[in-house]
Image (tube, rainbow, N blue to C red):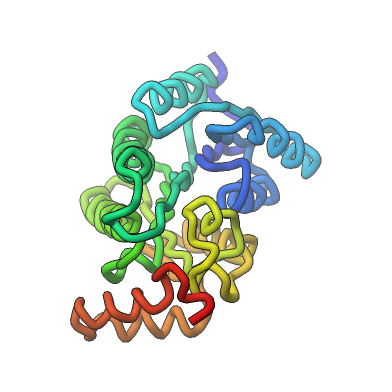
Length: 266
C-alpha cells in the first residue's frame, strides 16, 4: 500500500467558526489537507470555504462533548488511512454568570468538551504520533488559565487544566519527536461571549483581538515548536506577565471587574 502523500494532514476541532476556522485557514494556506469537525452543520459550509482556498478538506459534524462524538472523530481519522501530522484541539465553550445561578447541565457540558474530550482525543492521537516519531499538537487554552475567573469560574478552571495538561504532556514527550504547544488567546472577536451569556460584561462588550491574528500566532508557534504562545492585546499580555507574582485573590478581584454581569455599564 502506498503510504506517501503529497500533503500533510491537519485535524482541527471547532473548525466551523472563530479561532478554529482561522486555524484551519492557516493550515490550508500552508499546503495541508484538512479534517475539520464541529457540532453544527456549519462545518460543511466552512469546508467549502476552505476548499476555495485550494485545500483538500474532509468535514465531520460531531458533538465532541460526548464520548461517542470523540470516538466518531477517531473513526473518521482512522478511515482516512493516513497519519495525522498536526492536530489543533481547539473546540471549547464558555458559561458566564454567578455560579449560584448558572445552569449545572451547561457547566457539566463545558467540562465534557473543554476537559474530558481534550484528554480523550489526545489519548487517541498521541500514540500513533510517538510511534512515527513525529507530529504536532496545538491545544487552545486561554489567558484565563492564568487566574481564577469569577463569573466564569468553571470555564477558567477548565482552561487552567488544558494549559497544565499541555505543558506536562510536552515534557513527557520531549524526546519522542512529538511537539506540544498551548495557544493562550485573550478576549477574541468570536461568538464566544454571546454564547456564554456575557454580552453585558466589560470583557464581552470591550475591544477584542482578531481571530485571524490569534490563529496565525498559534500556527506559527506550533510550527516553531514553542511550548506556548500568548496571543492577546498588550494590556492582557501585561496582566499575564504581572500575574506571575500577584496573589491569586488579587487576580480573582481583577478578573471580577471585567466578567461580572452588568460590568459593561457600571
